[in-house]
Image (cartoon, rainbow, N blue to C red):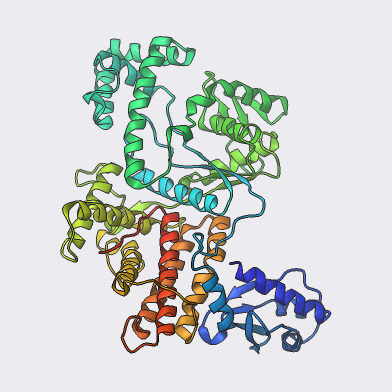
Length: 566
């Protein structure tokens, strides 16, 4: 339900009938219930253009607003704001209409865009650590959200699988006489450390490793086979984490650095031909206006850099994937890098001018005291270990709350633990740093996934106790029901805003508002009491089940499971 679009059309018709011309109509949510449900705040701008008193203009507009359907009443407030209240009957009809809608009233875009979302991006030399968490879950949420709204999404996992370190790793892999699938690669961190020790201690081994780098790049069959076995084993570790984290990345989504290796010379040639790059101190560089430091795209020894590979990737995503929008979900500290790369790509026509290029930057997950998140030993925690701990802590949180079999307890603990980690991250404005806090994220109170899951489970408990068919329409009778119904109908506007701005916290804030108002509704309006009229009981049951559907759909977009009982 695009409520704001409908209201904009009503205001547009009122302006036309009042012979007032407006370039843009913006409807905003009212900040307080006494200010209505929505506000039209464009009168001040109109007053400057028309050189008239804003309150007089607002009064004229209000006289032409249709209040026979969607809108119950409008009033002029302050110097010229127009407050809008929606009709309870309209809210009743619209919420009733989506009771059996699997999409809970959310439509799809009329014309789908092709959107590339680049996220996660682990390095194949090491296991995924907590530093990969934010990119993985923000990127996956954005992808799922865009797909739900009808966009054509192409997930891209730009893994680091190329470079000098891989010569060392495959030389050690060969020395261990393993095919990449045995015990030696169960712990990639230890394997890397052991290989590095050999590299530092043995000159012969180091020379062999350097030789293998050249052989990999030149397509040597033996070295490529060893390299591929290592990559396969590394990807296996990543896939285990993605499965545990409910992240929808597969092998088909991997587009590794090595994929673009053959395209890098053409990138350099294109930049030279267009006069965008020039040689400086033996290196090929691009000097952008306003940047004191040049962007090196090819070193003096012929080697390439990240910028070169990113330009090749942009060219591929434009020319081959035909993307309309390309989103890079990468640490905010890379903002300058992407600004430069995007500028070069557009200047060199590697990407069409109309293609949207976005760096979806995010802050850092911090430990207690605002310090970098570390293990007790001072290392960076493996992401898999963090998720395992989340499940164990969740089990301790819920094991006394309800009767669960061991299998049920494990399943519920996984849903709660993984959900807690993801929701705590997604509920923060992505550009902000945040403090990782187990107690806060596993709380039954506040803006947590467990609060959402508990609300959903409570509604399912009500439905089970009713134990009969739920029929009839939703009838909005009081203010709290009005607020809840309005919130449920705002779901599409919320998702659209989150998709445009790439802000998952827009969804979590919305869900928190929905659950908070539902809890108030549940407190004030008993659902299953014997002395309640049947029509009222059914209406409240329908409103509760619609709330559950919105919670479930919202959490599923975030990659979080609901729970039938806690």
